[in-house]
Amino acid sequence: MARARVAVIPIDEDIKDAVRRCFEEFGGVERFIKGDVFIKVNVLAPYRSLSNTSPEVIAAVIDVLRDGGAKKIYVMENTSAGLFTRLVFKAQGLDKMIREHGATPLYLDEEPAVMVNINGEVLRKIPFPRIVYERLVREKEKNTYIVLPRLKTHVLTKITCGIKLQHGLVYDDEKIYAHDRIDEKLVDILSFIKPDFAIVDCTESVHGGPLPPPPKEKEWSFPIGVLLAGDDVVAVDAVAAQLLGFTPRDVKHVWLAHEKGLGCADLNEIEIIGDLQRFVKKGRLDVFEEIKLPDYLKVIRGGKICPTGCPAYEAVLRGVYATAGAKRGFTLIYGGDVPKDKLTDVVEPVVLAGKCAMEELRDFFAGRRVIEIPECYNQYMAFKLFPRLMGVRWKFLRVISGGLGKALVHLLTSKIRGVRARVAM
Image (cartoon, rainbow, N blue to C red; front, side, top):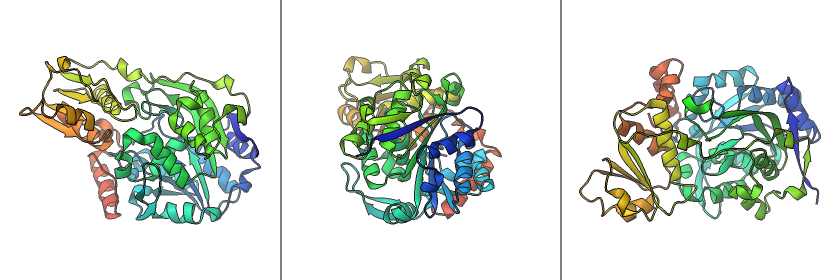
């Protein structure tokens, strides 16, 4: 069996040349073009952010594919819960740029669904974008699927790269579902659909991903200046983990994918083409602690916490505060085994986030102002609820070119087209 190979391509001056070299290390771009080409990008924020795949890299990949003979290219995304894809593309002018380079933007949250049987450990029968299922699962041999993530740290999954990128193939309800087992979910999705090729945008990265608060992004950013590429997304993610100072075993979904035979994460069995060590950085996951909260915003953590679930509520709280401030407060409680001596001086209302805190403390707070969020992590609810409790407007909408009016027009258009996103506007 051939060893997995991952290319480390420095970005010297010309990004398009670097992208071309990514393909050349694996036989040339023509080898990968069959039928229509679908590129899954990483676009989370409705503003130019280091959490998004950079427009320059997206444009370069489209151009290289067209030079190689691709006729129909789709650039697809289903952005984070709480937002909707048409908005984030329009606000950045990304849709216009994609069309200017000869490709078509594809908003997966507006695409009709078909029920599919994932038959995984966590995901079973779920709705799935029909176009992705028909073209990249049922007719996989006739079309091309490329993932184009931005490498960054992730407060729940250590890193987000090619495997994590595929969480954006499912609709919001499925993203929210069983977030405490997101690593297993990611492997379920990878078992169902695998990319033909991965190119990782490591031009610049951020601590505190997937989406640091805008005021902190520059402070938490660091340059890398390289692209990673390969036809085994598990191997690419394993090498990407090293680039941020982690081992493949540190990143649960990467190692689970390896153990299930979906690719190779054993660094002894991966041929690295190029000088990886020159670009290695140390990714930090604890940066949100640097955002100090006022006394009227309290966070109480239990002694038993699912690492890929409820801690994200605290990250959202700190991120909203860093971005928009707070005019009033509340108490956020999450996790199980919460020490009762920490509950003597809470600020109401009290938000019990996650099933553990709800079941353990519902009776304790009976008769008081309590808000319950039953999911281990519901990003939509966090972005919708926390700014309201803090008496501020979430500033995502303030950075949109054209303001709230245009955002509402985009939302109406998306709703007419059947958008399935949970929108926190």
